[in-house]
Image (cartoon, rainbow, N blue to C red):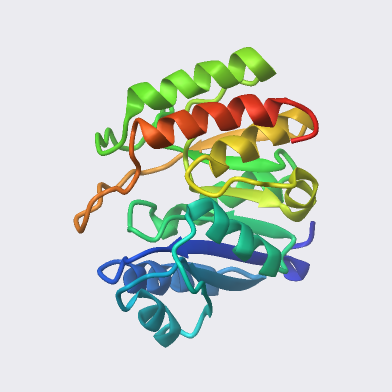
Amino acid sequence: MANSKVLLSVVIPVFNETQTIGDVIFRLRAVLRRQVFGYEIIVVDDGSTDKSAEIAKTQGVNVISLKMHRGKGYAMRIGFKKARGEIIATMDSDGSHNPEELTRLLVPIMEGQADLVIGSRLSPRKLTSGRAFNESGIRLFNVLIKVLTGIGVTDSQSGYRLLTSAVLKSLSLKSVEYEIESEMLVKATRQYFRIKEVPVTYVQRTYGKSRLDPFRDGFKIFLSILLAYRKGW
């Protein structure tokens, strides 16, 4: 894959993140401008009631505004449909993902070593020990995925990841909310795509709070893993 011919699409779902979305895009663009390949940034505003969409538009990126709040997974799927790149990246809009680490996640794909790369917050070589997410719940989902697929990962729920367009086109994603990461991973393993993890820094959000409900969303994630393992879903 020759760098000069590669287009990278970065999909960022956002819902009421006025305090962080501008900085995330600004830093991401600074990183991407230093690369030799082309890029596009697609921000999907998931029915925000604040100025998130307006702030993103001032950064000169492609902003898709949904009329109502539908969920992270739905917003990501809309962004995926608009993505034109041979490689697609996803990252959160709350500032918890470090844009400067995107290039390290790109390496395994550019070197032909992986089809899907996950930025792991729980790798043995992790760069921080953030506690703003449920590590025990993540480890439980990791075990379930390994039992079903035989593939072991340290952070199955990370939203910081890259994948090739060939992988994305083959997955037929259906998730609406936070369970999309699990569905994506399980369906990719079912089709024998190569999965690789790269340790990333986790930055605890300093504004607002996580909207993930550990019980309601945890059940949906659990169910999505079982459904994604079934052929035909």
